[in-house]
Length: 320
Image (cartoon, rainbow, N blue to C red; front, top):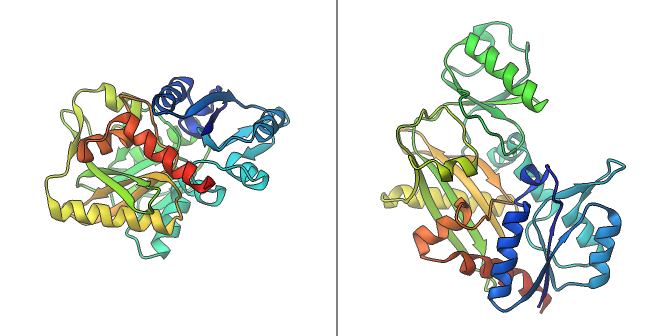
């Protein structure tokens, strides 16, 4: 099989998928080690993409969602390769937008009957008084868009109107977009990795994210979480909770029409009720620091190369 990995090698790679060169080279090595022929290509123009079409690979692994040309045209890669008849990994554009916009995903799944935390959006100055805010404190604030944000010392939980105003202003200033405000859930954090196998079955691995000696109000990027030894990924001991977490993740995967693979983040309240938090449709796949691949290692004992092989096998089976 002739496989190409497509990335952009620019600063948007971290916000636009898992397309850093380090990650892509790791995937490249993994694919070559399992017997396929794989190459890595940096695409930043429509001409670069047309060159891929000319080569007619059996599978294109999309490490980023889109590219932005010098003319500031956004080209969604899944849409482009669909139109050109080239087989690609991952989901369609219509699904990928749910991974980019937390509010859109929550609204869509809520209409499907899936539990989400209560939420609203805010911009600086929109709420004038404490009692204008539609949800009681504490509240959890974060960017609407699914960026690789990095708050080392910034509290994301607010307990009064002054904190609310300050945090909305801070987030809006950083990301130039409305702020997502959610009810604070006081339970456990889980992440669920799902791969659609070539036989049509789903491989579902759910793990718990434990935080020890950390201020739970602080947001960390995936890279920071892996480096911080006080925050661990562990198997879920409570079988009832595990089943609830997996069931919700599978429902979200199906309802969002995710293809090939995806990562669903879920949180519980103290009563153990599960809530959808977000979908990551191009999750980090860096060997040694990826929650997505680590979930399969923890629950199913799969190595990094075995996880990559599952993704490749699912993609290449569409060529037969």
